[in-house]
Length: 110
Image (cartoon, rainbow, N blue to C red):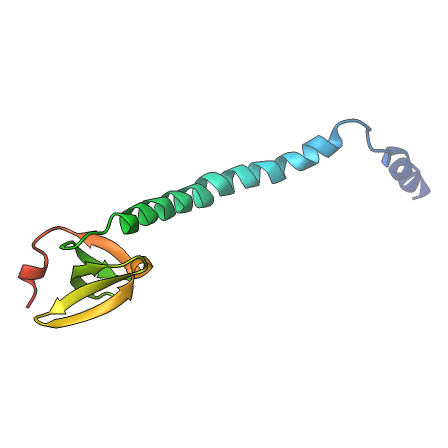
């Protein structure tokens, strides 16, 4: 039985060399996958949203992040006025506008 223990001690020495680089490789691979699958698409969506919010103009039909459909009646530096019904106007932050709708969407609503 003691010969198994002696063999185990003899094999215990690890080879020296580039084992640190090999150990770091999975971590780098996970970071690259994380970047391309999560970070990069999110940065692209964020940039598109900033561009859309910067280009808002009077007469555009938009949907807010709360789901309110309206037509822009006034544009300020940080707020926009939305006409959501006949004579009913609300003010929302520009960043709360989630998407731009095609012209004529408001006509189709009840």
